[in-house]
Length: 134
Image (cartoon, rainbow, N blue to C red):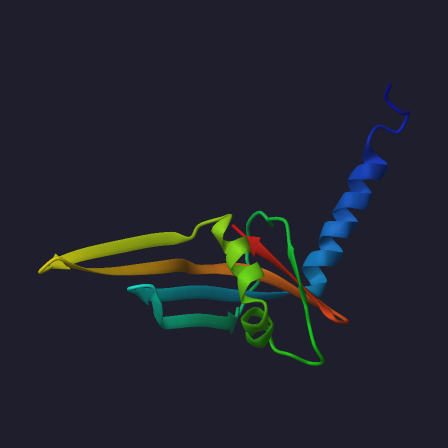
């Protein structure tokens, strides 16, 4: 059954929640690339920069990471690398692999790339709430 006032109260509550979340959070561009040669990590690059304007798009479910003292976003991601990598794999992680065989010796190079995307980041106490915007 439907209430007399319709669903307005729920709509207002959810709108207020979304607006407060967007107003408190900062926007960042985050990109990641790792190169692995013969099962050894050769190069790893994490780029984090604050956006000039707010990002537009759908906010995906957030990732909650522990924050010690006044760590920057890059330090938080570095300290929680495995959890952040698993979060990225859910969305758009690109994998490129090359294999060369010379004189029956195989050489393999794999590159993992997460293209630079916009994230909303909210620091509350000892937690960092990171959510992809797409």
